Image 1 (spheres, rainbow, N blue to C red):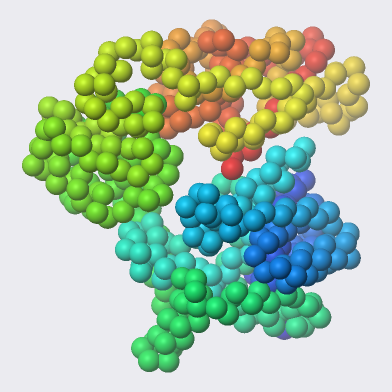
Image 2: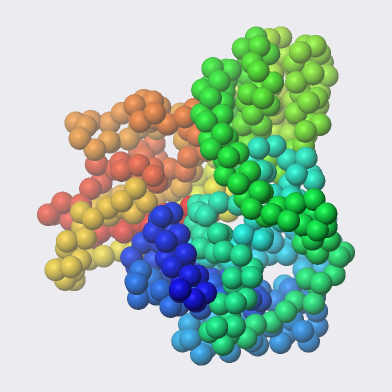
Length: 493
């Protein structure tokens, strides 16, 4: 079997094994013009009829390399045109963006690219996936960089084949295989001159560190690292399950701007689980762990073990941690205050907590598209008149999924909003004769406590219409008397 068929078969297998796409999906493909992305686009185009998806190309011109960058853009536009695929180009001054955000050029470029991908998704009327061209070599470089930075188990796992709506069909294909595929298929591609410079960390790892290890220490280092990642992933999955259980035991209270843990239950834990419990608390409060390092977690552990009441530990992105009696409290300074007395005052004044702008109800345009950045969610709505529906549309009335609902628009009206849960929320679960408290619904459906305040809900006043990911909204279901159907799709970014 030649390399062309090998790459096609691997990608076909990856798509099936990891459930990357469904029939009717639209794939937004990031194409820089390099060998990796050119190969990805060509393969996905070759498999388009097999899986019945459509394609859209997104190219980002970072405006870093003058005429070279413009030629990259022209190349991608011409290739897309030749394949009959729509191409969207985003031009952004990465250097200026990096300076404004105080990021490295690598970090700034990545943020800009993924924002361009999300924008392309938001303009579509279909559920989209974002396809990127990461391969085996990228995976190895990422893991080595994480080791150098002192990462924990999460960093040693590397990148996933599927991460929310991001898919990586080439993740088990080497750069050599990709270049050979391009050669066999007569595919030209662009070479980014900055990839040959050692000013960037990733380039140093690719051009200097890996070749040195292969020549002097282990010629099969690539295979060894991939094997390490697979072992760590399996072990990490088990540890995460244990950590989730212990986190729930340690958690006293979760709020939008504060999480309280019981020190008496936290301190006896094994150090490995303790670190993960603390990281989970920070992630639940802030949404990510960017900037959180080993030294931060170690300081919090020391704070708990010595019970240093009065000391406040400052964490990145407006977070802090301090001891209050037998409790460890994580607080979001941007919503609360790093003075303990102010935290206590906020805790007593529940009306302020309820009116916190972080739980602002955002009106949903019907029909239309809504991108809620803080929730990392896109909501698409359209109205279907039953009198205009053909037979296939009628069949779809009841064809709903956890992320796609059809409801009676006239029962909902125009006052539909998206927000997080609040006091007094009630839902009408499927099969129930009446409404139920949202809290009870979460408990019945075994929704982890750490997710309940971070789960987007669609509501009218205190009536929950739908929780994306769960099939609720029985009171608003489509019946034979329905005149106008509200079709809602939810995309998690």
